[in-house]
Each structure stands twice: as structure tokens, then as C-alpha cells.
Image (cartoon, rainbow, N blue to C red; front, side):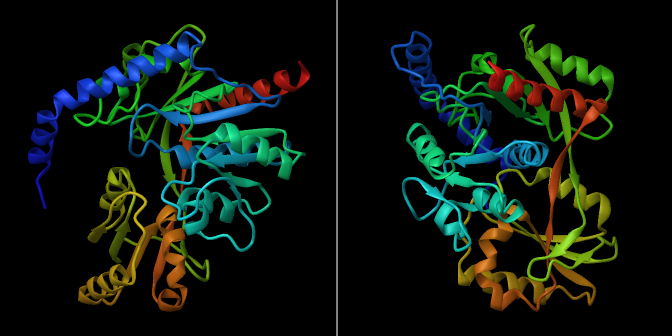
Length: 356
């Protein structure tokens, strides 16, 4: 494995390519801003959840937060790209759908909210009419990771940025992680600094807000991750995380740092098998997991994974159902008691859009 220092040095060498990338996205955004490239609107509220970078900023938990907020009062649906699925085009999840059909994150939504329409489609501008044809009762669509998909004009844009890697301090691909212009943050109505430490101070909050330089019409919020009770990947049986338990962490997410930090606080010892983001687990991977788990000497031991990884592991249901294989749920928690302010902005947008 290469060290982080080596990888950072290598990425610096790619600076000329980063400048070319910056030029490309600058031209693209200019063409949209000047309306040479067209953006289309639809006759219902569209809420976009996105970011300016590649990697994990907590988009999926934010989509889940919004679905949970809205589903009892509105006919809400989600639309994702369906990254790394083995199908193409538009698809709507049903009882026979798997992660290979729609992707891991949409599958996660489908399992959590089986009564909510969960759709995927690379071309959102084509997928929305198909979704509305299939589910004409839909009142609100949440667009998952569509901030760069400017062919559609969302009515409300929620932009996420990671506390440990703010977009203001990042650089463009492949030297950094930015996939969009820093100035594109001005297109968002709401900016959320995610994965904050739980004891973030008012002074730190103000310092970050000043660094972002929000427009007068923009709202800036701060969230941390709350981890729920572990549940068994097959039986859903709950168990508490005990500091004496040896843990084998299976992670195929973009940024496992917050998860690792949590385990360092709540467990005396853990082991880890790390895979690329959206990794499609193979039978050989499962053998490696079993071998690593068996090598842990403690009798009190479990395997732990994320909800996003779990949907890609359930295809091995017969092999893992009798193993102590647990899933760790995660959700956003708004800091500084500002959840109600955020919730009100969301519902006010929907109601005003609907009444106009």
C-alpha cells in the first residue's frame, strides 16, 4: 500500500491535468450561466442534494433525512443516478430489485422506505417524466447527487461540504477532490457543513461561515453523524457496541474517517478491511472476510459494516446469516438546535411552490 504522503505528492504532479479540468468545467458552467446550454424545470418541487467534490459528504443520509421528514405529509420520491449498477436507463425499484439493478445507495433507500418510489436514471431530464408517468401522484422529487446535472433546474439546492475537507480549501481533480467550480456554491439555497465534531463551538461555526462567505439569501447549517444501535444483517436483531468486543470493520465507502473515529472512542480494538467506494463484493472478498475474522483470537468478536455496504453483501445471505455480522446505521444531527429551522425551510419551499 502507498502512504498518504506519497499519494499526496503524486496528486501534486497531476496539477497540469487539474488546470485542464478546471478549464473544462469553467466553460461548461459559463455556457449554462449564459443559457447557451438549457436547463429545464418541472411543475413540481425538486430538491437537489449534492456537493462540489467527489467522495463522501453524507449525501445518502441527507436524502434519508429528507424522506423521513416529508413522507408522512407529501407523496415524495427519490431519483438517483444508480452508480455502479449493472443496468442502464430508467428503473423504478420493486420487491424484486437488488443493488445490482439500481445501485447500493438507492437500494438502501428502498429497503428503509419500501413505500416510497425509488427511481434511478443517468439522464435525470428523461427519468423525471418516466417517474411521473409511473407514479403520477408524486408531489416532491428528491434528486440525489444532481448538483452538477444542470440540465435540470431544481427549485431548492442543498450543498454539502465535509468539515474536514471544506470545498474552500480543496483543489480540482485529479490534484484535489473538487469536481465543480468553487464559485458554484452560490447556486445553492442551503449549505450544510457535515461530519462536524459534536462539540463544535459557536466561534468555530462563525469562522467556517465567514470562510464560506454565504450570500445573504443562503442558509448555512452544521451537522454531525449520529450512529444508531447495531442490527444483524439478516435477523435485524439489535445489540449494543461494547468496548470489550473485538470488531472487524468492513468498509467500502468514500470516507470512513468519521466511522473509524467513532470506533476508536467506543472500542478498545478493531481491525479493518477497506475496499473502494461502491465496491461490488465477490465470493473471494467474502473468503477474505471470513479468514480475517477467524484470525481474531477473541471469543467476543463481531463483523461490522455500514448500511451502504450491507446492501452489497446481502447477496451472500446464506453464507453470512449465521455469522455475527452487524450493520451500523448513521444519520445527520443538526448542531446548535437548528433542525427545526432547516425543516421549516424545506416545508415552506414545498408549500409555496405548490400554492403558486
